[in-house]
Length: 431
Image (cartoon, rainbow, N blue to C red; front, side, top):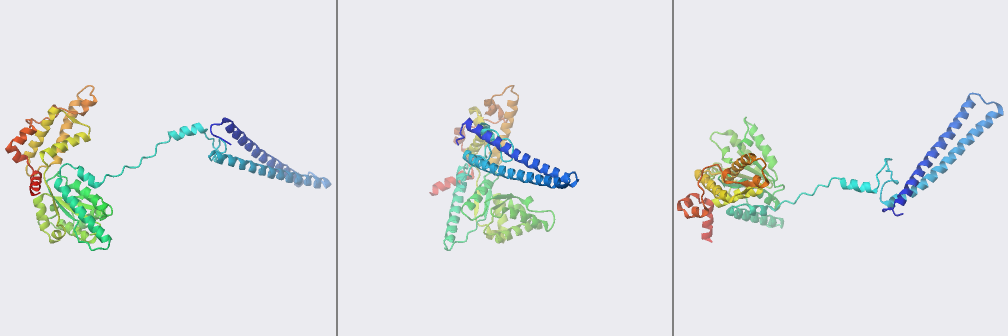
């Protein structure tokens, strides 16, 4: 029977279903009526209301009535089973688990059209998460850091081949995966460490590839004996990935038993979990060198240094522009020169410990705060108003510096040129 859009067939099935209910109702009615008659006859018999041959006759009649009712009920049940079999066949043909318009649990169901509407009303299934970007592609997209990218690719290529040689049964050259990152704040040390953790997982030298970032406060406790426990907790979190210790030299201070306890715990973990734990220590260049050289255990395990040089002004300006694009802001042409002038000024003010990308981020947040205050005073700001960074949003009184003027000034070039620029020039000359 075809149930696709045929109302007649649906009506037929409804009638069959009603008939099924009538049959079952009749069965139970006949059965219980006969049973009650039999009970009544038995009562009369027990109460002595019938005597002599009449007792035997009526008792026999009651027994016969009961047997007849049971026989009729049994026949009706068989007929009902047969009809239910036909209904099951129809149900299979319809591709539904209901008898007509009634579900198996007896609750009324909606018709095909309503079921379709309900199906459409169901919430959409969650879309599968987008695949993670390849960590090497993420590294390539970072602004600047050319020498860092070269060092990281060189290191991962070497580690990858050694792992493949080991898998093939060949002898592999022991190599320490632990690293020392040196340089000023905001030069991308934590970002690169996170990417490196994923790269190590990708080539099979780490099982998880997570990054756990800590400093002295996350490792050292206030009482003797507790530092080892606190440090061990961080190590357990980092197993299968990278433990990144920022300003690690803070652990090595004069007469500092707590810091030394943390160092000893870390060194032991590096030995115990050499196949599934990488430790990267980071900080300013000079203090980090003193820190590594102060302990023979550290010096033997950390023999690979990666220097993070300061960003150039062009790179810092590109980082500012990247933040604007990321958060849907656009800078007026007149304001762009002023932004560059502010970056140059801040870089010249802090030649020793300039915070690089972190400083640019702070500048960006100051400017958009000024912009928000300006736009909030408008009665009905438009979308363009909320997106535009204007000259008045740059409150600091700095003379704009044009790129051509800056490049033409020998004094500015000497002050603003970074170690990164110098290293790039040196590499170009050597090539």
